Image (cartoon, rainbow, N blue to C red; front, side, top):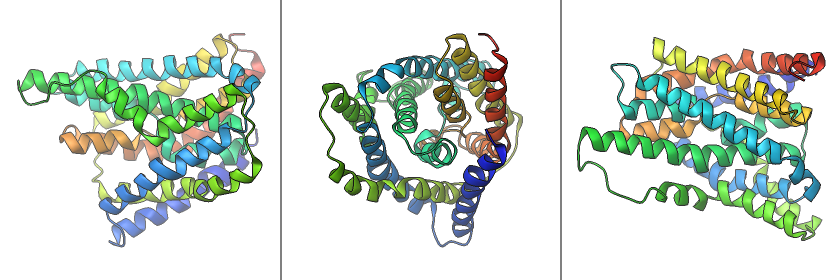
Length: 326
């Protein structure tokens, strides 16, 4: 794959749009509250529409081929998620809640905000790209977030008995699945499996809002970065190392070991190399837990992504050409 194409068509546009959002945030044109509203448009309308209309145009054969993608995504991402949690839990100054926030940030890629913005310029517009975004998104939102919240609440309850509500362990899972970004791709998969033909004349109605997904998400990410204070410390650096190096490396090794489809493997490695999930920062802010270090790790990872994205594409191509682990 031509790395200059990746840089010019995927990385540079993201930098330009994110910088525009960042500057507008610094000048006070938009605030962190505005970014939350933009994020809601992305997560509740634009992204679900983009996922649904792309997936319903796939075939049953595509879905069967992507079973391996689903399993490797789930195992790889959640293994990294729990590794981050247990490593940060070992540090004396960190509580279990701090470690849970670290996992929600450094153990989760921001697939909802940057997935299409990064993958489509590199791999084109296709159902395969949408399936990668959908599968990773479901792992992050329907598995990672509920697990992280459960770990956080358990720690907070232990520190201050009675400080958290005693709710069903399934409530975070149900809440995650109620979100359009989770049920829209699931509905699309069911549609394809049942074999209902998708009327082509319906696609433009979804495409119109779907096209706002990538640009609004990246612009909003810039505003969010402008609203947070950036200070480098060793835990922020370690979190970035886990996110930008460990996670894509684990996915690449698993994909090679289990002979994953080369194109799906490339897309999944890039998805795993995306910066940390912004949802982790939102949760950290809501619980007032690990906010400063978490936001610093997020900002540092966004900067590092500029170099690591083309690097991981090159490493994946090199591994596939050499037949490494095959």
